[in-house]
Amino acid sequence: MIPNRLNKSKILVAIPVFNEVDVYTIIQRVKSFSLDILVIDDGSTNHLREELIDAGNVRIIVHSRNLGYGKSIINAFMYAIKKKYDYLLTIDGDGQHEPEDIALFLTEIPFCDYDVLSGSRYFFPVMAGKDVPMERFLINKEITSILNRITNFGLTDSFCGFKAYRVERLKVFHLTEYGYGMPLQLWMQAWKTGLRVREIPVKLIYKDLTKHFKGILEDPNIRLQYYKNIIRKELTNAGQNMVVGYRTKKAVRY
Image 1: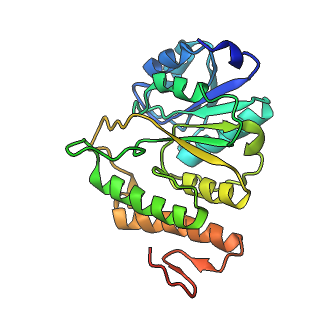
Image 2: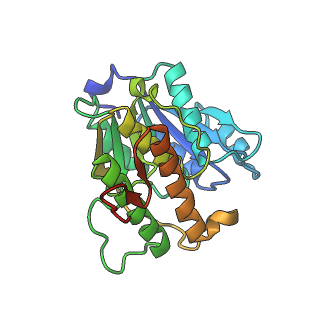
């Protein structure tokens, strides 16, 4: 249920999905908060669309083909702005976020001192023996370190999709990255436009440790370079005299 103080806030929960089999259950759990729900079906090839229709009282955007995680989030931003929501929450549809943790974000609404409230799976040190894909963890750590050197945001998890935004501030973004690197473009533009950012801890869940990226991004070296290139491009667009990997004069190696 929504606390009384939230009754005046118009809140949307957006769930990007692509062939996720657990999304129907996730939707039902999100419904317990009595919030509007938007599902972005990114070109699923299974019977997901029929399940979404059966879920009832859910807004749906359908991509005729798979366009990418970033494009799904961009669509959610555009929808929230167009429909004049006050806050947008995003939660992944693969079961790696606990819908019940939406309550953690709702307790922070209305936002007073920040514009983006981002979940972090690594807010606290990862415990020894915790089931975490080490390759993903190390790439996340390196990219997060690079972002912090540039932005001073003090992030601990630059890739977590569990977030809440003040919708009015979404209008400053000009996001063009459709792939998994979109969050990095978002962080860089948040820094350039002076948005205020805060993190809160959310549960660390990896349901399938064998899950991997498709195509060339399956190679971690190529994926890491792809992420760095997004940051480099945003720095170039900002007119900053830096490159990813070094800062001029101070030669700080990332």
